[in-house]
Length: 105
Image (cartoon, rainbow, N blue to C red):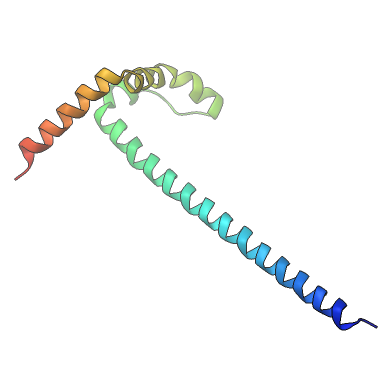
């Protein structure tokens, strides 16, 4: 026969487990939402790369992850060099602002 204390402890443990499950579910849902957002952003950026670097990437056939590491190595290095060159990035950002201001009504 369970005492009232045992019953209360059991109820508290059940509540703690329920809260823990909810917290894990919320964490999982946030992670899934962030991943979905990241994949969507990557898709959009991929469209831009395909459009503006068409000549450089259109002939590159996608493959497996291992094959892609080799196939896209040169273009990945190209992008890496651009991203790492802070002076170049600053100049490009200035050029972007200038262009946007020229086209702004």
